[in-house]
Length: 497
Ligand code: ATP
Ligand code: MG
Ligand code: ZN
Ligand code: MG
Image (cartoon, rainbow, N blue to C red; front, side, top):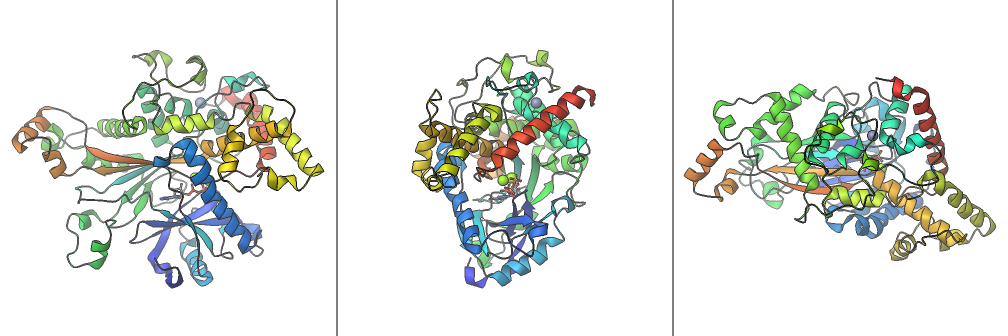
């Protein structure tokens, strides 16, 4: 990729969130993540090019120096800031505009700074060998996986019903979504396979912005790479993953659940099913979810290591429709090297809840009004380096009334907010016949496949994305939102279906 010779025809719309828009390269496994502004600021960018550069550099630093040490380096790809030709960015913004979902168009792509974050494309995993069926990539935005136990929590309901489930009622009441999702993060983070299965099924049924599936395009292209094609020899990424399943409000091109299961079927036809091609949709769905549960629990062996939750009772959300009595094998816990464990631990750095944190935020704010130069020294807006990490880890158990205590707690809270907002990307690469053959003589293998209903073979890799620092000043709006969500739930909560 040569930055001075960028061509918008090499890039296509890939997806977007609330803060950024992502385009992917058509051949290389690269994405560009560009900032977005509110549409009313489109003529008048809210920050200079230097500020935009600094903002993206902060994202890289926060991800590589802070989040990666908390979540585990193996899951993180921090990327690098790039400076793009402005003409390229303008053409790109025109090109992608018609592919953007209408409900995201209250913001526009930044075409003024020329700055972007360049990242590996996590939806196009490297292929060492051709595969029968194209790799799949599943993105889950799990949200907060625990109930607050802080003594500062003023409403009992917050210790019973999780934030996500309450927020769903608020979003439906305010027209953000037509239907409520029955996904509950506490089930996903439980480590109990049945509860996790239940959670993922509801993510699939009502994906909103919490669940997406990407599929690599090209089909036969990588079974027989074009001989003599220089592109094929320079990389192992035939084409980038394309979103095939997510919130239906996003775009008309996306499929419904039945067509999704139809597409997934070939991945799960094995053993006796391959012979008679018979498999119910329900069985396909179950196997697919099973693969995701395995990937989420996987990590590296020491399964069954107990998380430090105080009591199972607290980790069950009263709004979840999962029937507690269905837990047959007692409670299981998250393996300590699993992606879910690492995310949950980081989320739990929010020990005081926004209600307990807010007075400390005010203390810091007051201090900075009295001593404006201290903002830099306290690293409120970065830099996110080793010193920042030390500040947040050197937290006192008791509040001694100092500004240092308050700052450490605020930093911890902001890190927890990032962990509550990140996404998990699970890349599934179907194993090839040859790899299967390694496990025994072909005749033995065929017999074993035929006789057993052994799960389909995928190799997977798991990453965490969207690790931006949350601005210090967003804490006030966090408190207001929390109050609105809770009072809306108390007003309408149990009543909604
Ligand atoms: P949010 O509203 O969740 O905070 P955001 O605006 O911060 O989102 P991201 O979540 O980072 O933006 O990116 C938007 C989407 O682009 C993601 O949900 C994901 O589908 C896709 N995406 C982002 N980074 C990558 C990557 N490195 N590889 C592949 N896809 C990516
Ligand atoms: Mg995101
Ligand atoms: Zn819940
Ligand atoms: Mg984000």
